[in-house]
Amino acid sequence: MRRTSFSDSVYAITSLIPMGKVTTYAAIAKAMGSPRAARAVGNALGANRNPIVVPCHRVVRSDGGLGGYSGGEGPVTKAKLLGREGVRISAGKINLTKYLFADFP
DNA sequence: CACAAGGCGTAGA
DNA sequence: ATCTACGCCTTGT
Image (cartoon, rainbow, N blue to C red; front, side):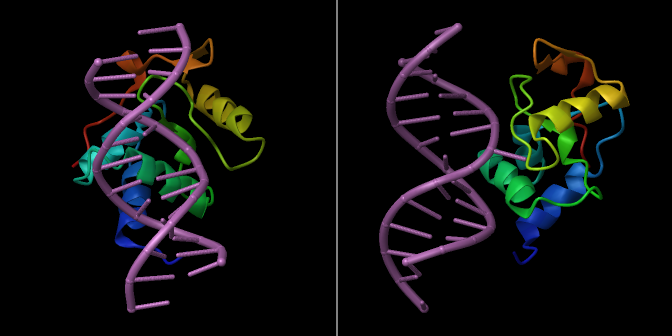
């Protein structure tokens, strides 16, 4: 589990997400230069199961789905955290049009 | 050291 | 709306 440049970038970007907003794996992958590495991003977050220092729960799918979560009760905890930050989830999906944040530096 | 398989997705047909 | 194919990282043999 060596913190590679990839996972490090993922953590950096993920931790940049403001409260009340969410991001997609594709957006992160794209922001780091590999728009096709969305899957790798999910792995970096999940495989490393980074502690609370990184709000991996703010990362959702491109279609609004929560995706997966390796912490707490899984997707349940993820949904709970998001709703607690002000992100409303309808039918298990998030309105990316309103909460999507992709203005990464 | 090299190879092979898996995984928290995405885009396209 | 459902299914398949793809590319990219991590981990194990």
